[in-house]
Image 1 (tube, chains in turn red, orange):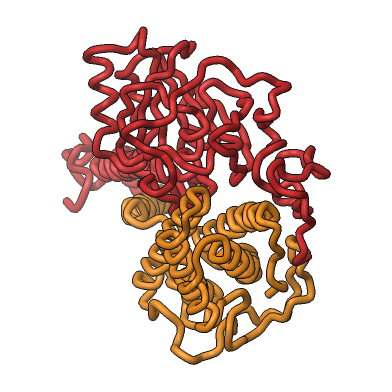
Image 2 (cartoon, chains in turn red, yellow):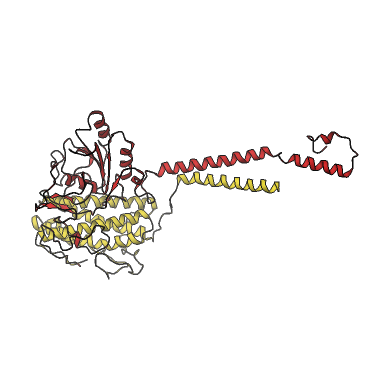
Length: 290
Length: 220
C-alpha cells in the first residue's frame, strides 16, 4: 500500500466498488491535510528566529547609536529627559573688567571673557568667574557645577572621577545653585539631584566635543598664555551685575568687543538688536572691506 | 492550495531570514562609506583649507610668541589652536579617503569650486571670482610673513590683525562653498562652523584694529 496506512479502510479487503474506493481515497486525502505539521512548525520556528534577529538588530542599532554623535544623530542629548536648550550667538568677547548679565544660572552660552577657563579635566576647588567658564563651553567642554552645601564626600568624589584627567571636562562649586548638580555644555543644561543619576554620563557622552553642537570645533582647553591663571582663577561673583553699570554686557552682546551685530548675513539666530551698536571699546569704525 | 500556501510561507520565511541577516550586517555599518574622489568638493576643500589654515597657524604663532598685549596673545593662541585642530581633523578625513594630505605643490587652488559662481556671499563680497587660482584669497606672501616676524609692539599687533583679518575673510568663500555643496555631512558641518566662527573672529579683529586706530588691509 502506497498510502493511507492510518485509514481503517486500508485494512478492508479489496474488490469494493469504484465509488467506494474514491470515497475512501477522499477520506484518506482529507486525513493527510494536517500532516505537514513538521513543516509548519519549522516555518514558525524560522519566522520566530527572523523576528528575534530583527528585534536584536533594532536593539543593537538603538543601543549603538543612541549616544553616538553622527550626521543622523547630531544631538544625542535629545534622548535625555530634562535637558534645557537655548540658541546662543558665539564669539562675543568681554574683558576682565566687564560682566555679562546672563539669562541662566549657571550660564551655558552667550558673551564671554576673552580667556577661556582651562578645561583639561580641571577640578576647581573654588567658584570661578562665569564669563571664563562660558568660553570653555564654546570650545566644546562640559562643565559640572555643584552646590557646595549639598554635594559633598562620596557624591563629590563620584563627580570628580568623571572630570579629573578627562579632556574637555571642568568642574567647580557654584554657591546658591538651585539644584545639587547642574551640567552645562554650549546651549545645553541639565539640572540633577543625584551624582549617581545615569544622565550625568549620558549628557557628557552626548555633548562633549560634539562638533555639531559646539560653535568652535577644535577649540583648545589649555589656557596658558591666555591671561587665565588656572592656579589663581578669577572668582565667581554671586551678585548679578548692575544694569546701569557701563561694564555690564547684556545677552545680545551690547557692549561686548564684537561687531557681529553689524553682520547682515541671515545665519545668526538672535535678533540683531544691536545693529547700530558700536563696540564699547572701539570707535565704531565701519567694516571697510564690505 | 496546500502547496501554494506552503510555497508562499516558505518564500516569506526566506525573505524574512534574508532581511534579518541584512539588518545584522547593517548594525556594523549604517552610513554611506563611499569616499569622495580626488576631484570632489570634499577633497578639494579639505586640502585647500588645510593650506589656508596652516598659514593662519603660522601667523598666530608669531603673534603669540612676540606680542606684549595679553588680550591679543590669548586671541592668537585661540586661533592657532583651533585652526591646527581643524586642520588635523581634515587630515584625518583625507587619510581615510585615501587622498593626499595636501594639494599638489604649485598646482592651482580652488579648482573644486567650479560650479560657476552661482553661490551667494553672506559677507557682502558677492561677485568674487571662483575657479582656480594660484594664491588663495587672504594668503599672506613670504615678504609679509618676514615683515611680521621682525615687527614688535603695536606695529606687530596691527600688522598681525590686518593680515589675519584679510586671511579670515579670504577663507570664507571656500568655507561657504563647501558648507553648501559638500557631499559628506561632517564636511558641510565643519565648513559651516568655520564660516560662523571666522565671521565672528573677523568682527572681533575689526574692533581690535579700531581700538588701535588702524585700518584693515584692502579686501582679499
